Image 1 (cartoon, rainbow, N blue to C red):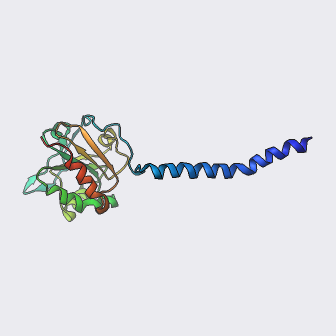
Image 2 (tube, rainbow, N blue to C red):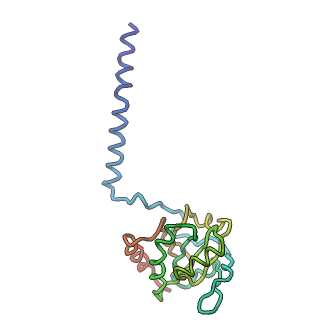
Image 3 (cartoon, rainbow, N blue to C red):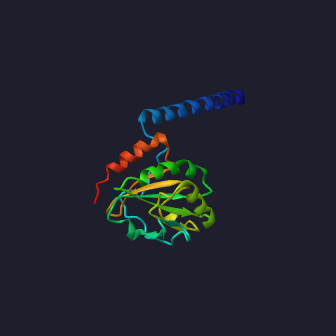
Amino acid sequence: MADVVERPRSRLLFLLPGLVFVALVVLFGVQLISGRNPAEVPSVLIDKPVPIFDLAPLEGLQADGRPVPGFSNRDLKGRVTVVNVWASWCAPCRQEHPLLVELARDPSVRVVGINQKDNPDNARRFLGALGNPYAAVGIDPNGRASIDWGVYGVPETFIVGPDGTIRHKHIGPLTPENFSAFKQRLAQIPRA
């Protein structure tokens, strides 16, 4: 009698890995068919006002012979602004930097940077070597402002509308492959 009870249980244990495999295939198949981009992580901050913050400037950073200012949430109103969270120690930040330089040439967009948990000397060297696309650079030495923005890691880039609301969040580096889609999103934001 005990042998009869053991057989169905052992068959179930034998079939369990196959059933789990089939369930995972169905789940992955549904995700692929849905057309959803798995790299996009939804943000609760979309269409919400930017968090309240006030970041000091990166001391010693100059542009056109004048100090580059820091910035606060109050400075993100009145025009479309791209906020890029970066650090000199971040290899993907170095890779995306030429695209930010290109973006900064557009007079209808203001590009600003949050320098996260970085050594000021290294940050100045980084911008000195690669060019400074930022109209303002605020330092976030302990990462507190970045946390308030919902940053997972550097680089991350936000589009802020002229009304001071976050309209888009891009996680990871801007690349030649995703840059045109980012610029299309940017073009959809009404100018002030």
